[in-house]
Amino acid sequence: MRPVAIVGAGMIPFGRRDDDNLMDLLAYASLNALDDAGLGDKGVDSVYVANMGAGMLNHQMSVASALVDRLSLMPAAAEAIENGPASGASAIKNGLLAVASGYYDVVLVVGGEKMRDVSGWRATDFVASMTHPTAEYIYGITLPGMAGMFTRLYMEKYGVTREHLVQVAIKNQEMGALNPYAHVESRITHEGIVDSWHSRVNNPPVADPLHLYDVCPVSDGAAAVILAPLDMAKKFKKTPVVIAGFGQATDTHSLQERQDPTDLKAVTLASQQALAMAKLTPSDISVAELHDAFTILEIAESEHVGFFPKGQGAQAVIDGKTKLGGQIPINVSGGLKARGHPVGATGVAQVVDLVWQLRHELPEGRQVKNAQTGLSVNFGGFGNNVVSFVLRRGE
Amino acid sequence: MMKQQINIVAYQCKACGKVHFPFHDRCLSCKGREFDEIKPQGNAKLITFSQIFNLPWGFDNRFIFVGVAEFENGVKAMGQITANDPGELKLGMTVKPTWGVVRVIGGEDVYGLIYKPIQ
Image 1 (cartoon, rainbow over the protein chains, first blue to last red):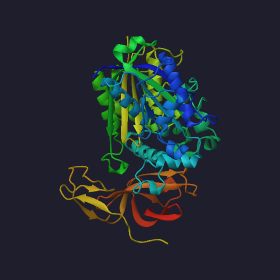
Image 2 (cartoon, helix red, strand yellow):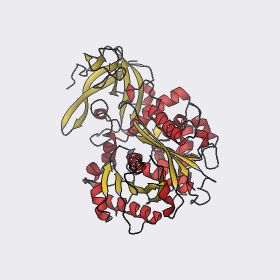
Image 3 (spheres, rainbow over the protein chains, first blue to last red):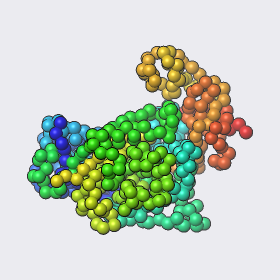
Image 4 (tube, each protein chain N blue to C red):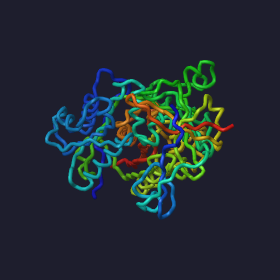
């Protein structure tokens, strides 16, 4: 297996993009990545498209075949990868293996989702279709509902409070306000979402004990990367970012069948695999993008990855350890909470944000100083399929 | 109309005794492939719950309560909960399982577990 580098990265602003269809989103992000790599009018060997819901949300199938046509990339191999909200990282993993094996040299991986084509309750139902059809879905459980049940247990076991969750939301929206690609670009204050009389309107409960500002928005968006063998990386114009490690692990479909439902085993295993492959430990990581679809997940994942001992992730947020300039800056992009969560795009967007960090391309106020290593966690289902990457700045 | 019988089946591994719900083709513990079908027994203990406001397509309610409870014979199952306020519920409390309409899908009533808190 040969080392693989990310030699191009691109994204489009996330949000509500009424004038664009799914293929527009995928094409624009792909073109940004191709241009970033300096590929110009050259082709690629293979295309992996991460998408979760084109069939249900957009009434379109075979999106990878459609994309190579849009981009005039024929006769490149092309296929779509569906792995729930971890589709993005799964697609990168498949591209990585194809290049590492020596079979392909230049691969485009793009993730995208067009969720705002449907009403909020249709989008909620679409995401809920990941749950077990007869043991969970029929009851009206939603992913925020799953997270609410998880949060209640985490609060009970580890003493996490609503205040801890609020601080994650404030931090990530503060960073999102600086990110031109973020869906939510507004700052929030403690007064606005907790203390004031109007906070009950601004920030109502969504899935008790979680409130509106504990939950990521439903977004349209896309992000893309170009992969190539590290020994070819000097042919491209940007500083390469090496995929130093990856890991993937699964867990039970139903939350209730986990011996300890607060234990996100797949997060632990996937990140441990990625770190071991990179020969690094959590303390070696400069910057992390964790899957904060719900504020509680940023805290829980920061513990399961090993940045903090179990039960200490919440206090780390209060102490500023996860802010820019802190011990381990987490979700400097604003995370899913502010950047948004177009489900098929998220895992790719996390990696794109880390690539920009490791190339030292971001403006002051967003750039982690001298960042050399990054870690991502892309969380599928409710933790039943998790993919993690460790990236390293190349020479 | 409320049906009285709790119409779910759990699966106990014949080799190691582990109780599963829902069904798996291989035991989550020992990979065994043979199971005894068992019914949930008695009342249940509430493990966790959430009051959900943003409901999926197909619900007209303002909110529902959904939770997971463990029956006396070890079967753990999700169900709706009859409650109006989270303050009415506590982790570890006893709930009585009933069987009724939990959702309408494609115009058809879908039956499932509805837990009623026991004060």
